[in-house]
Length: 262
Image (cartoon, rainbow, N blue to C red; front, side):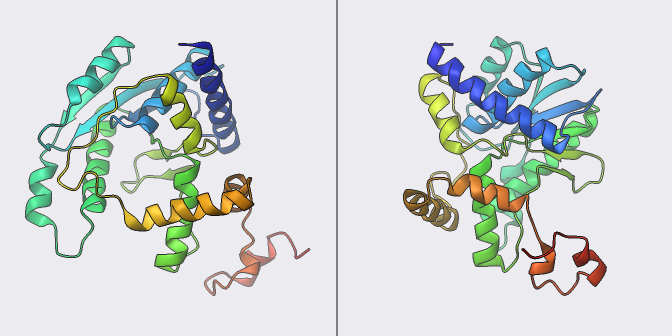
């Protein structure tokens, strides 16, 4: 790794370590399934967690898990070669999600959302199979704040992602250690350190999620006037005052436990 790449890597590692400490993401004896799709975010997550594992004061294990949805031309061998070359413990899993989507996708339903649910289910199953109690995903800071805006503008809810939460199946804990890392930092690292990037090869690959792209552009535009907007927004997600919102499901006692108005 070049000195420039090492510098960026260390910056991301520090932010990841802070997130792990702030949200208690990793504990003694954890066995963590790391979802590795072939994209830049999951690669950097795996390498960062491995670097932290080697020097951590606690013992935990990592297992990289790749889910092949079955789409033609998915170059999973490039991912496997990378995992093997860097001596990661890994599992390559092939599913028939492509056939399920073809048969079950209803008109008007998001292709990508349906595919993501199937991949997530397959990842949970593999984590269970290999006795992993936690699942690490590569969502970064930009994913968090884009989701916040998407839910506000299109869903009418004030919600984003959680750095740590109970999985849908009730068996595992999902963690997102890159919560403090901006996408630009990951891209900057990838510009000087070449990961074997592999796209999913699905029929709609390359058709960008227009709503999410609009949120990306909105944040980019605002950042020209407010350079620290990303840090401010991620801080806001971690500094919620329910008593200043309109959720009628919150009791008065729930609201009173929050910080009083300034």
